[in-house]
Image (tube, rainbow, N blue to C red; front, side, top):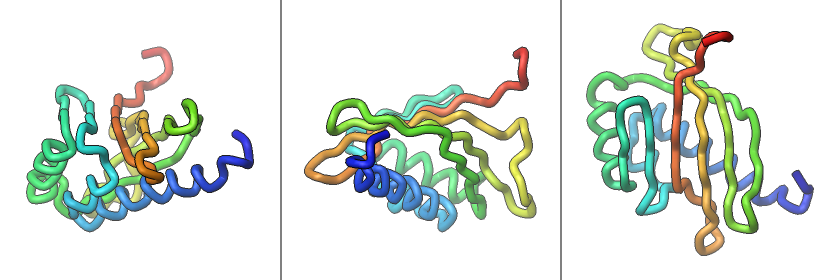
Length: 136
């Protein structure tokens, strides 16, 4: 990665950190604040096909099974696609109340696709898939 993209790298990391902080606060509006209107999120068994659908689903989850949770996120890589696109790969997991670490079975590999629109980096797509044990 070229040093000439240092500002973009910092801005992208800030977008992701803002999303993680909003999750920890149970704030669905804040979590999708940096998503494009036409963002998609794919998780096992579900496709959420707009920022508003993602927001509604997260609001319901924060009131129910994800209430009081936070996430653990380890960035594994970042690369740029042209001037206005970036892909971030990370390993993530959800910390439920009383947990200090994510169980191996709860870890997911994540792909974030970000797009620079109007000078601002926004999340255009999110996809996660369970981390499988070696050999699976």
